[in-house]
Length: 352
Ligand SMILES: *Cc1c(COP(=O)(O)O)cnc(C)c1O
Image: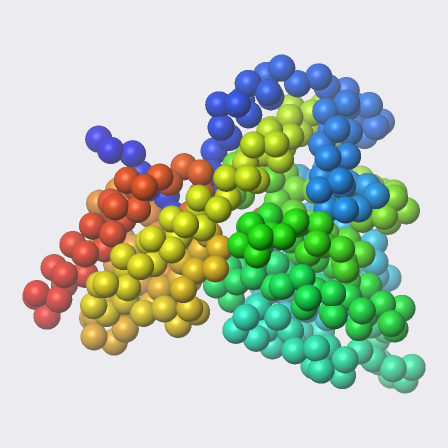
């Protein structure tokens, strides 16, 4: 029986053998007391990679973004963000439920950016009827826009716009290393204009658990208290941080392989009648495709048939799929996926 090719997300990636070994050997202590040497090392490495003073190991990207928003904003204050952003769509409304922070959403452009004129007009004035604007959140790579990449130049201008008015920029950089690899720049170059940045260890970097929030030493001290409030203070977390260190040391540099495979998968799928790319061809490790009206199958029906060929894909709309490349999908996985799509869709074409 061949293994399953799981393209639903890069979150399904398992820790590598090197990570399991590092986890078994990790030196640990009580991290809530600041005494876990492995967590301390991961936080220092992460801060260095992001070009920030300090880092905070958190259980998830969701908690990293939440702690950042709560550290930047008081209750009743407002964060500006994209209407297709992860914080708006997929974090269970935590900033509002737990922080009383108001979400002012602006339309994400197809390239993942927010129009900066829209941002400028969204920033509130002194009128006491209005909430106080405090923060702008950007996402890079942008997941729902297709795994698209926002340039360092755009990040820079967005940061300047906020800072000129005394406001803050948070980067949801869950996949900022993918963005950096795609652009051929350092992740720190993309994070430089941001006051805070979160990135995930548990996606394309393959660690089992965790994200790191980075920012100034003062900001991280504040966020550390918020993490404790949220129940995110972990004790001998060095067991997890050890995998994160391997992720930063070994997995960042191989991300271009995932991007190359995403392109190869997209090129192969482009040759199958009825498959379209409304979000464009892949810029990083994600491939979004749509079934056009010539195919009388929904995305869920196709996904179910692909499962019987050993292929799992994400369904993101009635006719839309997302496939995400990661360390555990190799070239033969791409070949098997293309063959399965051909069989599922051609069988259908011949009966219709
Ligand atoms: C996955 C993801 C997160 C949150 O990560 P979790 O660890 O699943 O909570 C945040 N932002 C983006 C863009 C993501 O893709």
